[in-house]
Amino acid sequence: MNYNASSVADKLQTYNQLLRNGSLYRANALWTTWQSFNSKDNPLRSIPLPKKDAAKTVNLFASATLHEAIMIAIRALDSVGRSTALKTNRVSFPVMVELMNLDGVRDELVDRARNWLEDGFLADKNQLSAETAMSELERETSELANSDVAKRLRNFRDEFLAHNLTFDEERERPVFSDVTQILSDLRALSDKASLAFEGSEIGWDFADDEWSRSASELWRTIYDGTLPNPNAQHN
Image (cartoon, rainbow, N blue to C red; front, side, top):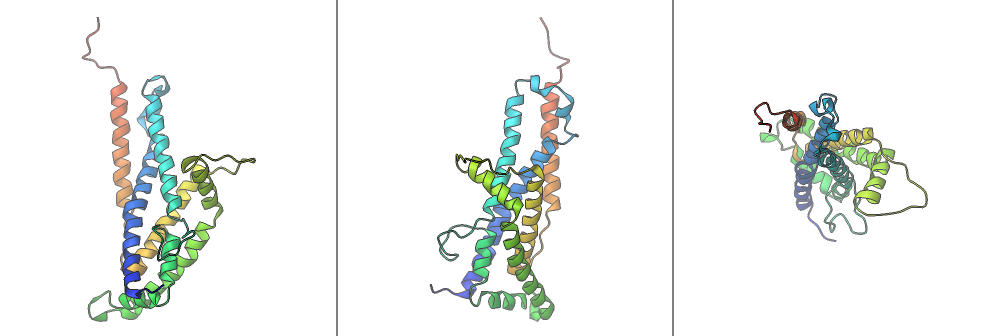
C-alpha cells in the first residue's frame, strides 16, 4: 500500500494523543478511584456499610471502576490483528510501533525532532532523544504485550468482560498488583511515544492527585449521609 511518511508521522501524533488523553488518563482515574475506595482512609470503612441498603450499589460502582480500568489497559496493547497498521481502526501501542517501523517514518520523526526548537537548536541532542525513545518504545511494547501480567489481564478481559466464555480448565486469574503494574508500564510507554512523536513530556501526578481528592470527597459525602440527622423529628 502506498503511504506518505509525513502523513504517517502525523497519524502517530494523533494516535498517541487519543491513547493518552482518551484512554490512559481515564484508566488511571478509574484505578485511583478504586484504590481510594479500598483505602484504610476511606471513612466508609469505619461504619457497618454492608448493613446499609446503599452497600450493594456502592460496591457495584467500585467493581465497575476496576473492570473498566482493566478493559482500557488491555486494549492499549491489542495487536493489529487480521488487518494492517495502515488499515486498522485500532489505536494501541503495538499499532503505533508498526506504523513507526514503516519505511521512511523513523527518518521523518528524526527530522522533526531535529527541528523541535527554533533554528535547529540542540538538533543532535533532540535527535538522540527521539531515536532512543523510539527504540525503547518498540522493545518495551513487545515485552509488556507478551508479559505474564498482560496475559492474565487479557484472559480476564476476554473471558469475563468482553465476552462470556467457558474453558475446560480455569485460567490463571490476575491479582490487583497486576493492574498497578500494567498502568505504570503503559504510562512509561506513553511518555516515550510522546517524546518520540511530539517532543513533549507528560505530567501524570497532578491528574492522580485530582482524582484522589475527588474520590475521597465522594466517600466522605456518602459517609456523612449515613450519620444520624440531629435535626430529624421522631414520632
